Length: 238
Image (cartoon, rainbow, N blue to C red; front, side, top):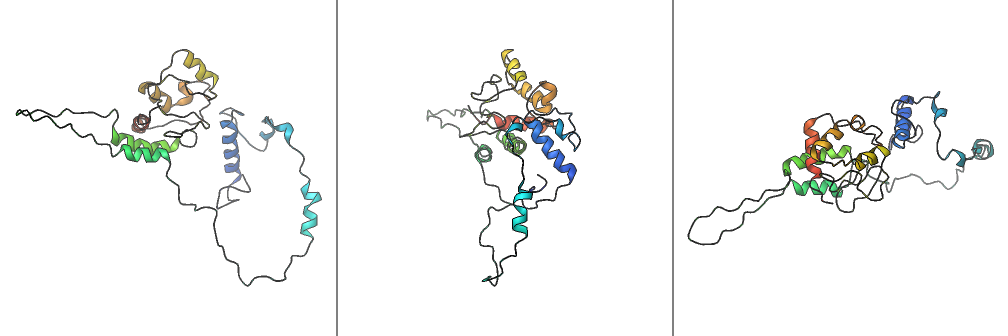
């Protein structure tokens, strides 16, 4: 982390930022508690599951001296060096299925059915969408905070968190092949249903709502953001 991050500006992180990132990674993998303070003094208090799989790195003694003592080759050099290709464009993020679905949701329109010509003026039936398209579009922006752990839409897969297709109104802990926390399993056995009120309470303060949850996200502070992201999730059927 210290040597290689962030992408495009490697080695620019302060020591505190490095410890913070490493602590977040450890916490997200259930290796430390949320009140653990990672530092050079507490680092060795963390037990990694693959601790016995490492070997001692002795390249500094066995390899570095061989290469550092050699004179660099300066023959047949090119007059100039040009960058012909880059690995990626830093400031471009490709559109994914979830943002595309939100864009389509914001353009939802319902056409009234054409009445039969009976000579009498009949009102066209009004068909209501099952979600607020404008609010769902706002929720797609809020969902960017969730995308690192959750996927929605066609082809969605479990990641750090489960897929969220059809989550609104669904029983808790119902996604197959996802390893839920003991706390979530217990809540599911108790009959927890992810209705809008339950989801709103969970999204506001996950760890207060469900003690022992693996979800590391601290929560959404704005009630408007919570309502918007729930409306956005309604657009994805199971």
